[in-house]
Amino acid sequence: MANNLSIVMTARAMTNKLFVIARQNYRENDALFRAVDADMVMHPSAIVAGKIRVLLATPMLYEFMSLAAYQEEDWACALVSRIAGLVDNRVPVIQEIVVDQDRHCAIHDALERGRVVQLGDIMRSPGDRDRSLRCIALLRISRNSRELLPEADTELLPGDRLLFCGTRRAFSTMEWTLCHTATLEYILTGEDRPRSWIWRKFQERKKR
Image 1 (cartoon, helix red, strand yellow):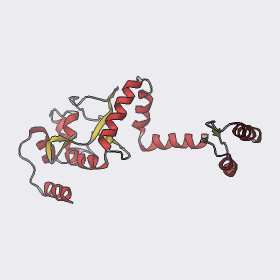
Image 2 (tube, rainbow, N blue to C red):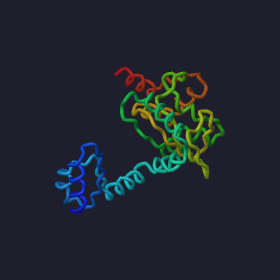
Image 3 (cartoon, rainbow, N blue to C red):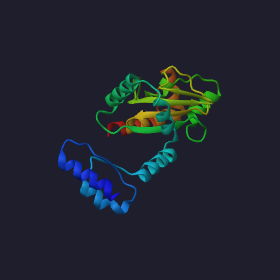
Image 4 (cartoon, helix red, strand yellow):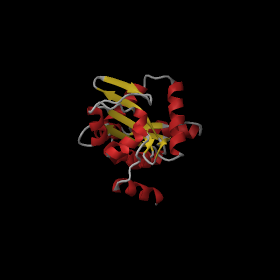
C-alpha cells in the first residue's frame, strides 16, 4: 500500500491533470487516503455490503440492473430521460409491488374474479383516472417470465411482481387503487366515483 500511495503522490507532483482512483482495503487507513485526496476511492467491502443491502431491500432492483446491463446505450439514455422528466431533479423512489391477497387485496380479488386489469390502470390517479401518476414500470416478473419496461396495456395476473420508479407521492396514491375496491372500480370503469369515507380522506389529503 505504501508503495502505491507513493506512486500516486509522485505522479501528482509531475502533473495535476491526473484522475486518481484508489482501492482501499482497510478502514484504519482512512487518514492516509484522505491525505492522498484521490478523485475516487473504492472500498471492496462497502461495494459488497451495498449489493447485499439492495438484495435485501429491493431484490427486483438488482435483477433489473442485471437485465438492463445487456441493453443498448440508446435504451439506457432514453430511460434516464424519462425518469428525469418524472421526478423533476429529485431523487427517484424505487418501489416493489406484489399483486397478492395480503398486501393488495382489491386488485388481487378483481383478478381472481376474472376482471381484466392492465398495468396502465394502476398507474392512473384515483382522483382523476384520465391523469397518470408520476411513475414508470421498470420490470414485471410474472410466473417464469421477466419483462423490462412493460407496456401500459400489459394484463396483470395474480402473483405478479412489479418494479416501479417515480415519486413517493405517486406510490402512496397508487395504494388507494391497489387496496380499495371502490377506487379500483372507478379506475377501471370511470363510473361511480367513490364517495366512501376512504375517498373523502383521499380528497382531504390532496388539499393539504
